[in-house]
Image (cartoon, rainbow, N blue to C red; front, side):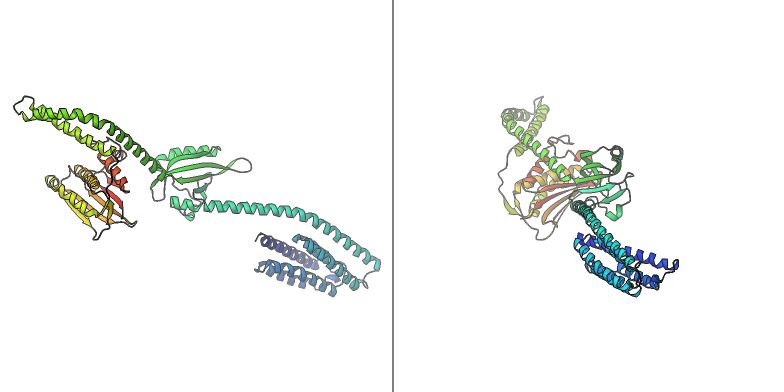
Length: 517
């Protein structure tokens, strides 16, 4: 393909030289009256028109090459035959010189042989016009000149060959660079000094949401408004030649959503060492951040479990003794300390509850798995909590699709998850006049089954949501801060996950997603 490209360019150069020579030769007719130019202006202009047609037509380059070489020699011989003059014979030299454009030793040698035969033909045609010695000198001059052209052509061939090899290497490098740019998994964007987009790759379009046509030549908002000052300072440093490799930032998509990105900012220098553009290579690392969060959460669970395993036994033994005595004191209603004993007994029960939750964290539960329908478990939990719904005036509604797929797991553990989340929803609606709890069970497009628990409570603020899975973090006066972390642990043991969508003063939607059996 590269050879074809070079041959097209050489054919174009050959035609351009022929067109220029014919044009100049034809124009000379109007300024110099010579018998050897008779009628040439008209035939030359016709030849120019034909050459222009060949210049623009999509003809096979190999065919055009041989057609030009053979056709031009035949045309020159026909012209010399019609108008014999040694000046016209100079066209033969010009054609031989043009052959060097193709940088082919074979063509140069063949052309020299043809030249010799043409000169013999010219000698036979013009010997009656000129004196023998005049033409012999001219003939010798032409042959000598053509020998020189042949030597020059051989010398230029090596130079052009090296140049074309460099061009091929450069074209190959550019092709590989373009292939890398287009197929890279990381987003790549190039900006000018005014932060307008010069070009982007397909990965950029996928990651940020802008198409190449939308953003080229424009300034786009890939940085959140609250981080614009940091981006401005980095840009100023880039213009001074500084690079920023492996920088973790928060970037913004076209739709306004944020994501964690690992970016590398680099200046692009010209030959004078001045910054002419900048490049940004970006990678979405949101999943890495999520993995880090899950790892930290697992470590917290592990620490809490180890703590529970070490403390539960040691605490329960003395607490059993204390609980026995306080129960005796509570039964004595005549005691002046009866009220205090009641409080102590309640607190002991609370300590026992905390220890129970500790043990849930510490024990790697022996999972007795069985297939079951989630809607049956949800209805059972709601039936158990019906009294609480009535006392707090909560209107509950359960919706599920008929013939929902079953899951496999431990019923009792999942009951605890539903109880924890429904209790949280009820507590979030305490200040509401109309309390509505909706539970929906449905199959998702990803071949999973989801339990959606929605309330119209006070919602969860972003600050609290960021710590919701941390041990002992709670906003309740009597809370232990272990409910959500236990629920998340059970969900992970069932290969499921929890998704929280909340709006302050509007409510919270918690989705529990399970793999289908």
